[in-house]
Image 1 (cartoon, rainbow, N blue to C red):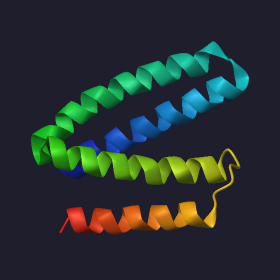
Image 2 (cartoon, rainbow, N blue to C red):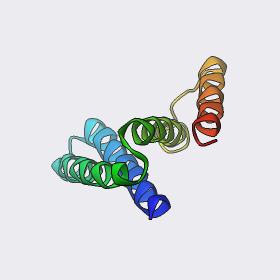
Image 3 (tube, rainbow, N blue to C red):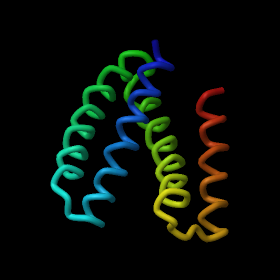
Length: 102
């Protein structure tokens, strides 16, 4: 069940962050409502995931995956600039994910 619950955690987190960014850009209250609702789901799914991997590992995996997917969404969807040094940082995060999961 860990892969499913963790995937849902990351999906809701990405939807919440994207909704927050869209609210900041448009001031449409529906985007704010979406962000609040999805962040509430993030809390619920985070608690669920901790039953499989524990708090420390869950938090490490969540923070890393969230950073990677938020960076990708910012770059491709919102057309935000990513510097070469920032890309190296994302690479280091990927290496960290491999090490944590070994």
